[in-house]
Image 1 (cartoon, rainbow over the protein chains, first blue to last red):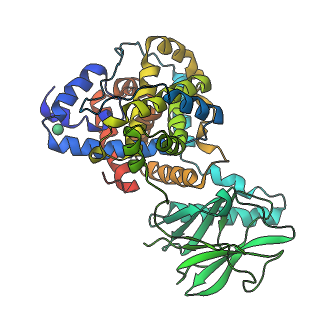
Image 2 (spheres, chains in turn cyan, red):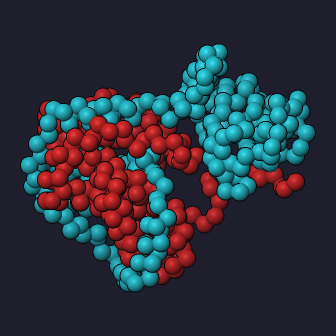
Image 3 (cartoon, chains in turn green, blue):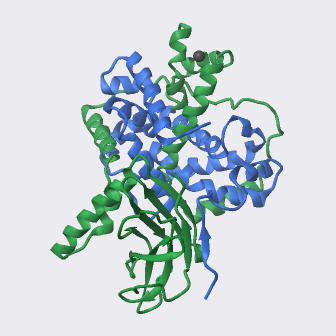
Length: 251
Length: 194
Ligand SMILES: [Zn+2]
């Protein structure tokens, strides 16, 4: 293979999509080509993001097994050794039916949807549905905006929260996982922080521990947001100290 | 009333994965537990997307995690992030498994399972995962159809570029190029710098 051709293999290499013989040839090339080495580093990091995006929650039993097993496994001595892949030759005959192709394409297409967000707004009443649809579209617009920025962190009691802000859409989305339910008869109310004064940004669903909320109203000059516990229906002004404060991400 | 929790734009608190992995390389089992808690979800998710079979995926993910322990001394921070290192390892192992002889035979008919809804829309997941997913999804949309298909078939299905070419009936030279320019576009959209 010519050197010019080898330069084009960075993507396939980063995705582990080269058959064994070509992988070895390309690794020899990498040793001599600075540009490809840097590009492979970046494209591997990009591929890892594809991996992160399909993260799941591993079962507790697996944790126990792994933690038990490592107590019996001896670590390698530090060395510069390359990770020699014990790869069996990839000489299998790949026959894929048209059906499989269609299925793959469908899976790829499904990936492009916003299905995850749809179920946040499953409501019955027609009006609510229409309103929810609109909110959902807005929500998707914020998340998909090219200038969308995110802050995330841990809340009290193991809950996780994040806020996504898009200056161009001028709206913000708040996401929470595993939040404690508010005390009976109370709700979580969200607030924009306008230079220290709080402006209501809507209520969270009191029955949900996971929620995705499009904040009511424009972001405008707000520098962050807060959450307070308020009587059902919400308050005009916060009546309790905030349970969480978040800075909006810097553009 | 408890103290308000203040969240800033800074990345998550606690020792970062990189530092933990350096401790693991010195045999620190507590550090490994923390590494495990950060990487096990991504590792299992990735392996499962390639292998599909839940039991086999767990087995391979477990092997990968033990390998992280065993080969931690090999990790070189200068060559990329810790998560990147772990996920590269996981992808290698999953792809090795899927290309091994017995798996190849089984795969033929596993193809029929490919149209089952992928794991992408599980609901009860952490906020970070939902965001990561949404960003990746958004950026995948900026790719051309052929770029996106090539990249996702190679990465999530563990196909070689030759298999991708065969599957899509596209010349091999084109597939190589699409894998590269597709990833470059993703890199730029995700703002990856390595
Ligand atoms: Zn090169």
